[in-house]
Amino acid sequence: MSRSGSSSGREVILGIGGGIAAYKSCDLLRRLQEYGFLVTVVPTPASLNFVGATTWEALSGRPVLSEVWQDVPSVAHINLANRADYILIGPATADLIARIAQGRADDLLTNVVLASGAPKLIVPAMHPQMWLNPSTVANVETLRERGFIVMAPEVGRLTGSDVGQGRFPETAKIIEQFQEIVGWNSDLLGYRLLITAGGTREPIDPVRFIGNRSSGKQGYAVALAAVTRGARVQLIAANCELPDIEGVEIIPVETTADMARELDERFFECDALIMCAAVADARPVRPSIEKIKKNELESIELEPNPDLLASLAAKKSLSQVLVGFAAETQDHLENAAQKLLRKNLDLLYVNDVSGGAIFGSDMTRGTIITRDGGEIVVSEASKDTLANVLLDQVNFRLSLPNV
Ligand code: C5P
Image (cartoon, rainbow, N blue to C red; front, top):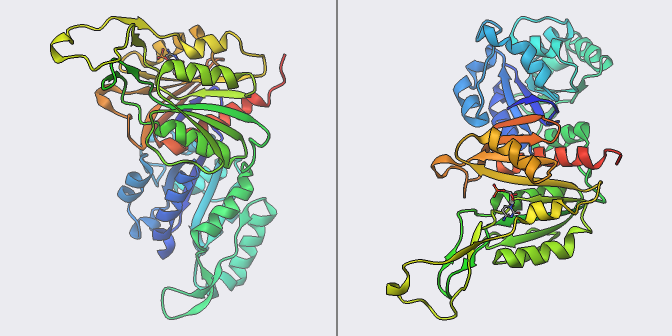
């Protein structure tokens, strides 16, 4: 993911030191992604003896470098440092802690640490004698004085038969500590979000309909993320076969007219409307009450559906934030920019659906474009991650003073 204009607030550099606990950070990486973070892994060269770059690339979906001598024109250490909203290093070995404490820059990770002002969490793991050695104790103290958060390793069985303080903490504990640093848990408390999901269907007769391939997964992901972050969420779900979300009011609908009615009823009360649903562009003028015979199905007279989002945007108050979703197969960004203006939106997420990609998938790829010309490129992320990145942008706009 690259940025211009505004920060996603969710970019994490996951640094891996050369300890056996490196394999546990595969789980840590997954959990960070589930919590909506966009993670770039930077392993030290030594750590590649435990877990190779291929594994990190496969799990993170992003390129992985460990030396400054790789991909030199990209100036990776500065780019990564600028991109990072947070740096989490785990496992951190005694050597890595010593190098960071001394301000050394002899591999990519230590370069990034030096060049970044982002909050940094260090999760050590090593043999108890190394942890308790006065050199390590002094180095940890130095780091804490400089603002690094250094977790204490846990007491327990180590790689060999030894027992003592040095174990890498459980993933859940690291995530808990990390979330405390990030502090975004309830940032949408008090806001009312109206979200649509799925695809509307327009009946041709009692059996057939005009519809689309939207599964509703993205809308449900946004609703789940929003309620998790404290928002009051109403989800208008068009033809979705997905489990209910605790705490979210779900309003099932079938047609565009149903959706329009439910939106009209609720729009004036919401702080933000996020229209993930794929709305059928047209509907049969006269749906048949009886099933149409095969030989009479030569043509169906259609009329366009109203643009729900555009018509609501025309009546929106200054403080309301409106988000659209666009599925494009060509000229994504030009089309998206025009669409954002035409529909009078604050944000538009455009995804590339050429070749049937994204519909029904748990993953997405696209660009969030903002009214002020910003672009946030989401290169390959789960729909949960996109949901949180998008909600960061919504939250930012909700907190702006209304001029
Ligand atoms: O114009 P397009 O269909 O690409 O726009 C997509 C966005 O507009 C989505 O957010 C969708 O929910 C919304 N839309 C709408 N009413 C329509 C068509 C699209 O609200 N008739």
